[in-house]
Length: 286
Image (cartoon, rainbow, N blue to C red; front, top):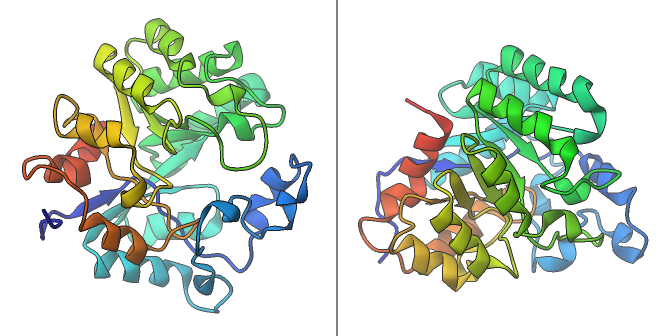
């Protein structure tokens, strides 16, 4: 059925256009092949990255709010690492909620930085990119455990990229099977996967059935490419486990996502959970 109107969508991954693509320099430093020629390191995966919103001398916050308003997105989850994001949080607290960043290679200083972000910006979650750390760090590596422990202590979830990474560097840190040990060792941790879990999406479903605090967000995928196993799970036992996440402006336009969304085969009763309620519960939004 078409997307129901008036839900007030919560987007668990949205951002702001910048003047250039310098934000991806940390990824380019690790690349060893011509992938580095792209402005956006996973541009090869998308037919059209919404580059028109970059460097157009418009207010980046206004650009993102305009897209949100046009397509019924009420709240966006944004990183707090940049000046624009911090301005958005302070000037539009009703529209944006903050997500902190973690770096397991910084040891206890990284854990202290989590607390600083939590206290300064009121972050409701943290985000991890295990294949993107330099050096890389596995999801179940001992260096991640202080981070997971601090998430439990602060009572906030962690959103983590899982599955084959888009940038052309090794995949081993993000194998889905690594989640099993983490969820076993941290039964109180709320863990939300990002970026597909492919090609192990069937295993991701099995693990979500097994672990009550393991969730899946649909970030970085146009809806026509959501894995079939995830759609089937959302329409059955996983209605409370799958939540919407976009990828604007990093790789997909909101228009592309929402146009595709009209053809997504979700049950009537699943739409509100997928687009809003599951994220609201995980992020503890009133």
